[in-house]
Amino acid sequence: MLILAIDTSAVASAALVSDDSLESVIGSFATEDTRSHAEVLAPGIEQLLAGAGLSGADVDVIVAGVGPGPFTGLRSGIVTARSLAFVWQKPLYGLMSLDAIALEVAESTEAAAEFIVATDARRKEVYWARYALAGSQLPHLLDGPHVGFAAGLPDLPVYGAGAGLYPDVLHAVPEFAARQPEALSLGQFALARLAAGEQLLDTTPLYLRESDAQVPGPRKRAL
Amino acid sequence: MNHHPQSSQPLVLGIESSCDETGVGLVRGTRLLANTVSSSMEEHVRFGGVIPEIASRAHLDAFVPTLREALAAAGVTLDDVDAIAVTSGPGLAGALMVGVCAAKALAVATGKPLYAINHLVAHVGVGLLEPAPGAPGTCAEKAPQADGSPANTLPENLGALLVSGGHTEILRIRSITDDVELLGSTIDDAAGEAYDKVARLLGLGYPGGPAIDRLARTGNAKAIRFPRGLTQPKYMGTAEEPGPHRYDWSFSGLKTAVARCVEQFEARGEEVPVADIAAAFQEAVVDVITSKAVLACRENGVTELLLGGGVAANSRLRQLTEQRCGAAGIRLTVPPLVLCTDNGAMVAALGAQLVMAGVAPSGIRFAPDSSMPVTSVSA
Ligand SMILES: [Zn+2]
Image (cartoon, rainbow over all chains, first blue to last red; front, side, top):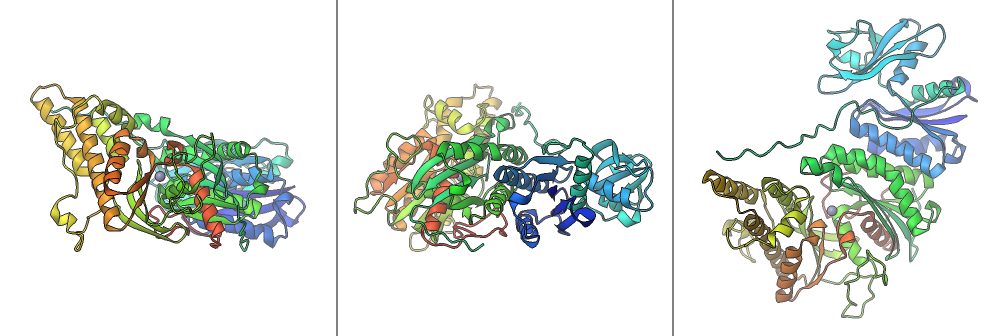
């Protein structure tokens, strides 16, 4: 099974993963910045396919990170995934973006049995979710995703770029203090979960916040 | 990308998402095949204006269904399409991003060339669509060219007056594919925005344009005189020595004047003459838009004017524009309203012109530009 994974919940990233290939990786790219999605995502996907000598017809499934993440960037990946799936007529699924980091934690040597993944939600807040590990299983989501202040997180080790921003108020794990969700881990997670017969999400974005719009109050009358 | 179709009648898919309409249109050469629009207008009503984040969320969910519907309406598939065109600016940054990313994904998935289109110039592009007998949504009012040139070429000395909730501009078009000049524009609110704000002041709901237009018919426009922005000599100058805003508009002072007027009636304990205020406000907007537009046309040799944008639906704007253009010897064209408001067909129409003119596609690396100037017809 060949999966094209896309995540733009923080950086822009895409990956091709397959259960036929070593470590399941065929190719991937990720930006460092979080503001160039519209420019780099489509060319990146085009190069990824060309570099692997593959075309859309070879892709079996498309998965997109559905956040949480800053809205404009998040939508760029989801609309890209939906459009590709429409043209190529491929099944399309969503994954919670924090799962990407959770899988990397699970595969690291010193993973705690229970931990938090957090990313930058701007406005001095983080997006976060709580996971559990048991044996060699995939990380299991216990709670979340949520958005809130770092100081309000449960007292557990915290992985991800959201932790690195607030080392004073939470237990940031240094090796993961700058880690952002990326499509490669997300795609590998999707592959593992589909192989295990698990259901994935649809591509409804997890905004977690309202649009900020204020219904205007009644106009103040003079006198 | 090195596709470069020069088909004489290219089939172009156009995508629009610069404000609150998700539009997908299909045009073959100058023939309109489909114009499907999904609007999030209803979701903005309770806020009294377009909320960018709500519009962007709606674009994401509307895009694929709107695309599917447009293809079905045109009876074509993406395989048949020669090129894709998308609005890359000007407009709301987050909203543009959805259409641009979708268009790029379509280009990657199909291998078709992609054109990044200027939204304002696309409003002029609809003027090139041929009248289709009996079909709604085409330029039925377009008369044959006096000089006998075919209907798919724009007249010489063409100007365009664009009035909507997002923009207010007067353009001069020497070539729709590579020579468009901004003669004047609003320096603050768009005219449609001013309508929305004043409608809210008067308790008339959203969108403000139709509400004020309706009520104004029952009011006395001469009962109150509201200011016409940027009409003082220091802004206007003379034809020989134009001032800094000779062809520009400003509506923020007008909005403040309306607010003050309402407050004065209330402070005196009198009933607010809402219909008169609506009529006087509308007269101030329409008077200053048309007088400056006609001045710009006269002084720049524009003899053909196209009226575009959603406010083209306003009865008084149409009436006064017709009257003043007539008096100045300017021929006016008003496309049907479905093509005046934001839509994908206008993007496709301009895209087809670029393909036919042999203009190179934009590729897939461009960034949306929320303040794209009209001098960039395509990126
Ligand atoms: Zn417009």
